[in-house]
Image (cartoon, rainbow, N blue to C red; front, side, top):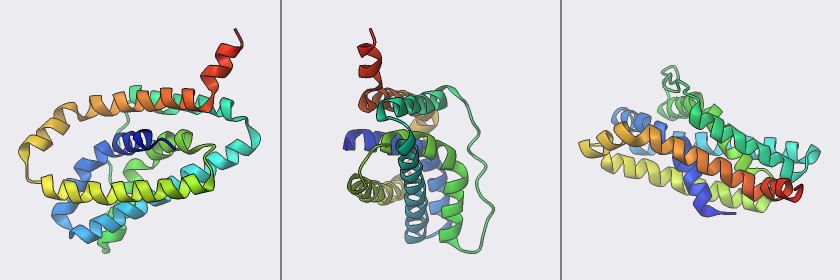
Length: 187
């Protein structure tokens, strides 16, 4: 498991949601936001892994490398993620459902190709790693929430950085799955 790619994947999938976290942290207590965000990440990671495992039963790993097209497609496709979930009485549930409504499509499309073909042990390690990154991200955003320079930078460059990350992830999936070696082997 490549932790650099996992970290890059986590950041690129969640970059736009980091703005939402700024607002959620203003509205709810830090532990409530941490728990809701952590649960959202773990649920979507689990869905990505198990969908990938189901596909791997029917298709060879190199062919699953075609899934690398999903993050590349998302890099060039503008979708409006900023809808958010309906406000509920439970802060944890509200953060959880907001995360699912904003990030489910991107999360599944990006993490599925990265996790396909991984062992269950690697998946568990990934859950722990991404869970730790989730908690760290909320804590850091909590600390940085009041710095205007951070918000301005993400506002002006966040979209471009996220697209570059998606493209890098897509090409990594092509390479890691063996798709490129398989195609080059045909020539």
